[in-house]
Image (tube, rainbow, N blue to C red; front, side):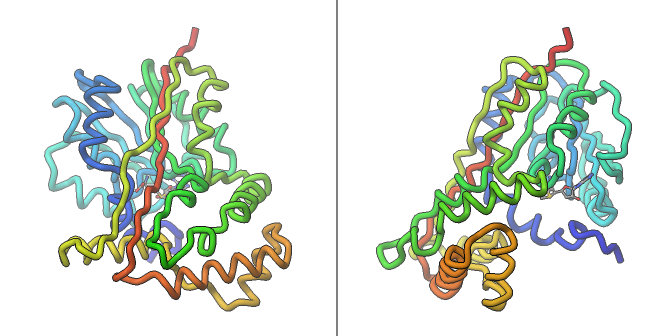
Length: 293
Ligand SMILES: C[S@@+](CC[C@H](N)C(=O)[O-])C[C@H]1O[C@@H](n2cnc3c(N)ncnc32)[C@H](O)[C@@H]1O
């Protein structure tokens, strides 16, 4: 069995992707914003089990192709099993984007929830650009601090008590400057894309808002509540001294670490399937035109 981290997260990926986009919004992007009305050859870096291909191929003109590349052997195996049953033209490759050679052979390079895990997103973006023939490139990436700001609870629970925005802002910034991995990369991508020479750069935000509603039907709740937990909402914090020690190592003061631990614990204790909750993951979708002149 693979020991690669993401190979052990297939269930997490399966259970959480649907929290990020409305299908009609993706259709709106493909048909009205990107106006993709001729067949497209796309490549998806860090494709996982092929989520983006599964969402986009049915919306694209016949003859479109999807190439998925991921480091995870099990993820690629899973993707092959899924796509083998479908009528699309798909190629799935196991590989490390940091090592593979690319050539300008695709119309569009995509990634989803991938660049935030890269130590050098600028270099990876450059590689993605180098794999595109001409025309557009598209990235879907998160913006963690916007995501953290987009929770609503009923009157019994204050947002500021369970999500400490200032502390999270600091943690994400310190983590990014130390590791290069930036959970807020989604909102910065337009700047990076333009700096790397793309033109007509635009950025959109997903309109998906998840609503855990006491009045929703049981089947919808049985799907949504576990997915929200899997997303990490109300996750049980580790043992207090260890959690606080790690937070201090990541740059918080002892006081901030204590307040952060208390906030995580409170959300863990208060959030259950009877809670009212609204949550907008706020995925950012950035795109622009590769221009080599
Ligand atoms: C959060 S998952 C997203 C997967 C997929 N895009 C999705 O949204 O379902 C991040 C993915 O990036 C892949 N990944 C991370 N580093 C990679 C690398 N150096 N080369 C190729 N894939 C990589 C992981 O294996 C994992 O599947």
